[in-house]
Image (cartoon, rainbow, N blue to C red; front, side, top):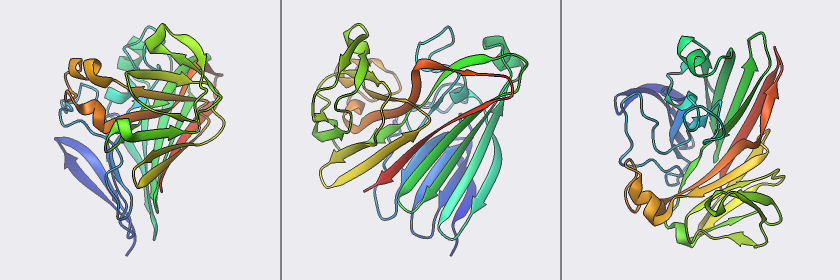
Length: 282
């Protein structure tokens, strides 16, 4: 039996349900081109979606994998994380094979985006499930008549059983900007990163995969094109202050994001840039 792609309604939003014969599953909303669920074959849900997430078509959906473009966080004059995550994307590609399912969604500049950011662009997000792998690739094309610069990220909310018992490996030796400590630049000197307090770090020029370990399962996290890795957990006080996150939501999630954040990507007219994040359940 080949893989399937089904058009569904998810909390009132048009969405796509991808499924492979081996048992992998994913749900992708057209709102924000946002992956909201991913379950590897025979496994558990590996993305965190807040039970208080808002599905009103205007508010960013808390959880899954939001697409941050053309601005990451507050690194600019746009609303935090840009506008791509609150826009309706268009389905452009759907393909299935014996063991994979692939969808592509696109977003183009229009009057509303130009009112916020005066550039012409094309964005495409490709989502692939195959075996125990989830692969996302974001491509940005400059379709205008002047060069532009942007920052971007795949803001991946990983589901964890207990964040204090989770270990993130692979960031040893890399420098990072610590937003919690007045944006000071530090160097990671530990063998593993343990989340024991509010954490908001942008690791720079990460050149190797990262591994998330918890109890009897692990998740491999690899990026190409995105030079930075963001690690975020709001912890107790911040979690309680976020309206669309349960007070204890921080215990069940850890964001490990592929990002181009420290230096903006400068894109000449007619050129394209791409970045990819791959998650592998181990």
